[in-house]
Length: 169
Image (tube, rainbow, N blue to C red; front, side, top):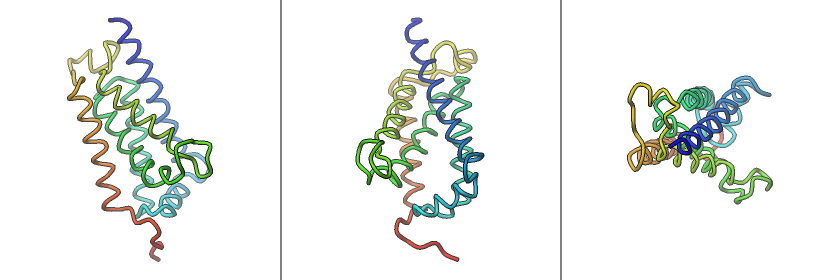
């Protein structure tokens, strides 16, 4: 149905451009990668330099994949993973609303849920996935995004996040 293809395309473009903007800002905005690394260190994600680079590449890569409609469920998992880390490490303590001091979690939660919805919906017929016959959607697409993305984000936090600890060196 054209409505489903249109909805999938709108979601892919919205999420894809948002993720590219996030990655671009990490790489080329204000403090660039060194500033992003310092910020990661300040919230307890260490080593900051490594995670700044990985988050930037993940966001840029996920955004590009979403815009193309290529590996849709994997791209959605990448979004879910990076936003899960942001949700837990930085935003959840500030309450729901984004306008609260420190920025609440409504924005990152919405991105997570939109990515999960897109993974369940599929990329639509106007996608590279459709052109090459890659069809992963429905409950399996949702599971890939939620389990791989959320699980990956939680694993990263379990291994590398030490809130309140002072940086070494």
